[in-house]
Every structure is written in structure tokens, then in C-alpha cells.
Length: 205
Image 1 (tube, rainbow, N blue to C red):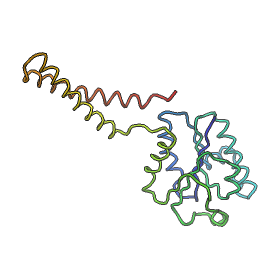
Image 2 (image 1 turned 45 degrees about the horizontal axis):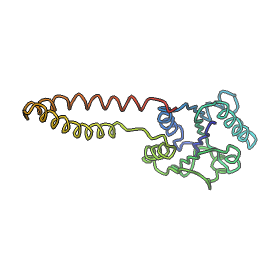
Image 3 (image 1 turned 90 degrees about the vertical axis):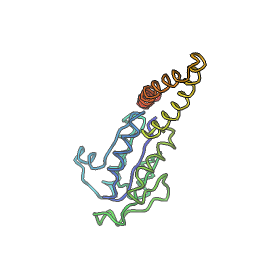
Image 4 (image 1 turned 180 degrees about the horizontal axis):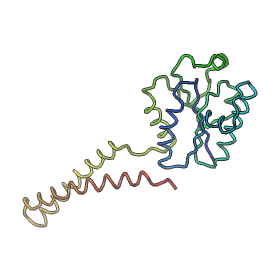
């Protein structure tokens, strides 16, 4: 069943920029559909921002998300009132509270601060941190490049010590054992790192 993720906030709060990064991370292991409010309105040629028009857009976004059949449907739109949010019924709500007011007076007037949300971003610098939290909370955590490198190094240190000791025991020559250990440490680190990165691209079954 598709999980609906709502990225909401005033116009200009950074919803689209945030959503782009979130979708990129989610797509590493899952099917994802991204629905941007302006793109959807353009597709339906519907620029009605009356209460009725806004409600129609909410139902449209929800229906498109459900019909996508993706693992996650990420919808970024203002969704300015609690009534609209209740209708959309998101599984996860991300509120970008980065600006005091948007560029449209009518939207500012009706906008209600959400009383229920899962994540709130008040500073642009928190974007990556929040995305990491979402990925972790959803159980979709993937290794960062830095973490993969550190794991490769620590594993190879242990592996090289083991190789050195075994080679010394077998050959009886510590110089030869050191040469064997020193030769394999670099190649094994590279292979381990590539192995980790390859597994991170395998979709979860």
C-alpha cells in the first residue's frame, strides 16, 4: 500500500528543493512518485485558488498518490489548513517552517500552523539532517560513502592482521608475511567498498 508523504509549508519555504533530495534518497531502494502542486495544476489547467479549488486540488493530489501504486508518493504543496490536511490524510507530514510569510497574501491569510506533524524544519541547514532522520525512522537507512569507507578501513585492519599472523605461522618468515599482508590490504579495501556500495543499490525485497 502506498504511503503518502506530505511536504507542506508556505510558498517559497523550500518544499520543492527539499522534496527533490528526499525523493532521491528514497529511490535508492523503493519505488517513488513525486507530485508537485504546480505541476499538477498545470497538467489539469486548474488555477482556481478559491476554497473549493484548493479542496479539489487536495483530493486530486491524494487520488494521484494512491493511484501511483508506488511504495511512497511524495506530494509537495501548501495544504494551508487543518481541514485540507485531514482530507489528504498523510502517513508522514513534513512541515517546512522556514519563512514567516509567503509571497501570496491570500495564502498567508488562511494558512494555519499544523498541530500534527512528524518533522518540522525551521532552518535550511536542517534539510539533510531531517532527511537522514526520515530514512532512519522508516527503516530505510543506507550507508553513506564516508561510513562505507570507515567500515572498509576497520575491517581491513583486522583482516590484514589475521593474514599477517597466518602467513607468519605458515611460512615462518615475518618479512614474507608482512609483504603478503601489505599487498592484499589495498585491494581488499577497494573491493569491500565497492561491494558495500553495490548492495546499497539493490532494492529491498
